[in-house]
Length: 323
Image 1 (cartoon, helix red, strand yellow):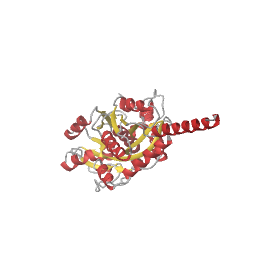
Image 2 (cartoon, rainbow, N blue to C red; image 1 turned 135 degrees about the vertical axis):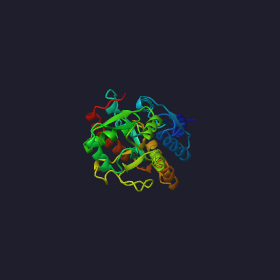
Image 3 (cartoon, rainbow, N blue to C red; image 1 turned 30 degrees about the vertical axis):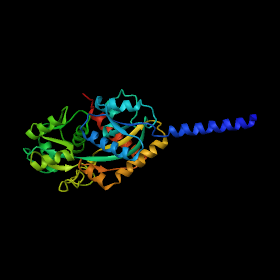
Image 4 (tube, one colour; image 1 turned 180 degrees about the vertical axis):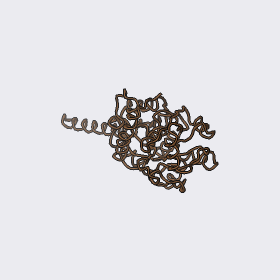
């Protein structure tokens, strides 16, 4: 066999080998890990397991949820930050993701620049509830009572810098009232004290508070969503009662490490949005008090950027620091 002929055959074999390796390494080439930066059983964890199931049904590899709680979300988030940017390690982030650098000034990363956004998933409104012993049935009555009794009302949260805490701080500033923040370390204890009247009021996930309002344990005054909720259509939004700056929703999004392969981002976004478009998905999320978002990387980037600027200002002005 002549040298040129052998070289041509060898070149063809090498090309075929390279093509085979590329195909073998095409994304996804292994199990995908979906990290949740919080303990199992919470709303973020529940949404993450829905997302993992949906992605696994639409992608050729399994998707497993890994809970890595600690540091108010920092531990799990940084595990994704340090992961190989190959599209096999993802983060189901909650709204706190945009706030972590403001809460922890020593963090050396940015919630947007150091991650690859894939798509927004869902948003959950909160309900403003009060103990029935308070002589108020509307938000204007609550604000009038607070102004007549400065510093006597308290509001609860499940921790410093949580959405419940920041919602209360924003209400104080926009309404010009003085209330005392009482942070708890768990949702069970705070709801128990709210029911007994040790806590006067609270912003809490809509789905969690609905059973309490229906039983009469607490009184719902308003919701924080831009529009009224189908789950509580009789409750006005805070915007309706004159607090236009109080449109607040918790949200969930899908992220990966910075510099993820574009093909992985595209495939993940397509699979996720296909699931979000299904009527059954809207029904399942509605059971958590959530509404479908969906969209692309730019949409999630806008959410993170807007939330970082909005709540970073509240955190700085109130000098909020985690416990």
